[in-house]
Image (cartoon, rainbow, N blue to C red; front, side):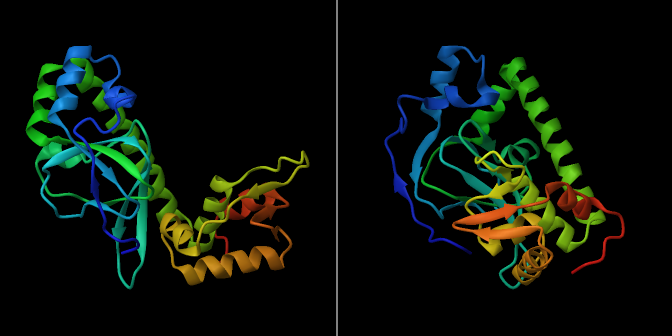
Length: 245
């Protein structure tokens, strides 16, 4: 597991200026109810690399991300991890297990220094029963999660490893600020990070990047990659029966 499991406890109201008002799913909650929820939470100031929970852990709490970023993933074998999602300020994680009472389905770890509010499961369920608007917002969130998961499953099942690496590069790319027609990835994530999102190995990431550079579609530049022909890369990432590298 990457990262040291370290933790620094914060005061009960770890981020007084923001609090839970930043959380999308809590938008519109009455101020008094929001304050009561904040007081019921255990507030934590966590360093990067701290595990919030592991798959198969009991569903003891729901976690609201007030600042920082956390990552949900599943360790597979030989150090390989499949990334599920990133959660940033305003997100929540752990609600599925809290709702059905079953064990966790993924590991969740802080990616950066984060402020997290851990809401005990009984408190979360009481809010769910008492606040219909909150329940509806949660249903909308779950529907969005299911749609995103369905798309990811389709990509993993229908695209080969190299195509998934190409697709991840496309997702990471932004237009070159110099104004030409190229796109860039800056900074370039570690091969392990790309592999986690592409559900493949670091060796396959290296081979895919090498193939793109050899074919002239991608160039290395200081601190990043330049995609010279984005349309061609999009075709390669989606082309039916595209051969692996």
